Length: 114
Image (cartoon, rainbow, N blue to C red; front, side):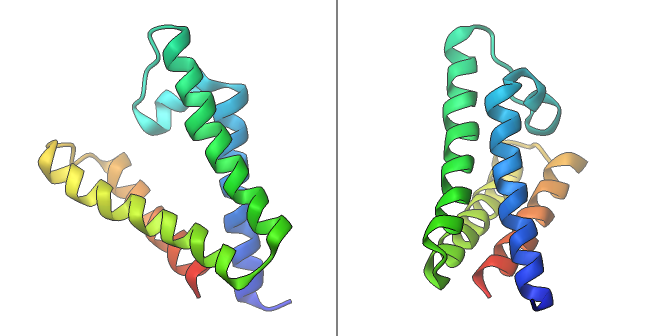
């Protein structure tokens, strides 16, 4: 197994783990997202979007196992990073955790697109 394949596998596992944490412990995501859920509706959104979407996309890459599915997941991360960069300036949210997330999303995106 090549280094790139190992890094891609790690990226996919991190995607699924992010989803699982969001699904199982939705209130815990506040620390790394800044999101808070005031009630059941907000918790459902965290479980569904951050949980279900990330789990589903990660599993899809494993199940379909095509170059295109790896690239799709990578493009998702790069799109999130691009929107986050714009939002950092528009929303005046230039904090360390946002920049760490941008760097992580760009690295994961590039690894998966290659």
